[in-house]
Length: 379
Image (cartoon, rainbow, N blue to C red):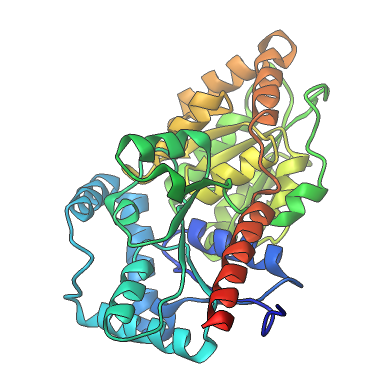
């Protein structure tokens, strides 16, 4: 039987953290040429201005008041998302439903935990049921909003996370270990080999918006006396806020510092550097793993990012270094004895790298979409 059309895949994301968008884009790229796919952000479409305020507030709290965020995160653990009480979220839900009806997808993929609840209520109100796949962008410690989502499948980042969810009584057959769907370009790149002389030792730094942390962190790396170091600072969305400080650092260490604004070449940068330093977000951690680039966690958001750090520790690919003295100690541990510990971390990461994760996720999505089309054609 000939399928009626190329499978349609609707990918719903949200801008609260980079992981959701990175996973959505990675999957969409892997589906190119095999499916009609669109990436939507219902929260942004429903109320762009208010959503912008919420996103800014989220970044502010997680950067400057992590303890406050942990309380919010723990409260979310106890919340019932099957009921819609917020007028704002009702607008978001309406935007989501409108997109579903307009696009008429064969499969709905969500990289944000709330959208499967929207899909369930849509079906209960008389809408057409479609398979729902949830891509969990965190590792090991998974919030209840993900775990309780009414979804047909959960895509998870690694075996450790799958085991964690099974221990919490989620059905094993619904948990698919695809890996985090990083940009498929990772599969075409060659990370630095563990035999690299690592001289100079090139560090890729993703600072948060916190000005007070930028210069001390950079100087701790550049002033390390036992091994020559170079630093690339990726300022991203913090370009305007941090540029002057970063420029002063670059001027103080001639020919040893590169500044990058918003870069689409993060996969290439990770593969060219010996070490990444940054926040323990799902995207950054799993992109570092995909590039076999050891990572030091400079900033940790309590709750949601603790599992990402734990994953790095378990696989032997990184550690927490949230103070300048901890960074210096970590550099010493990595680079002593001709960088033997750095080489061991590279080797450990090579056993866990998943550069093909987006294509694996896309393959499973297409399989489910094909089944849905056949069922529809038979009916």
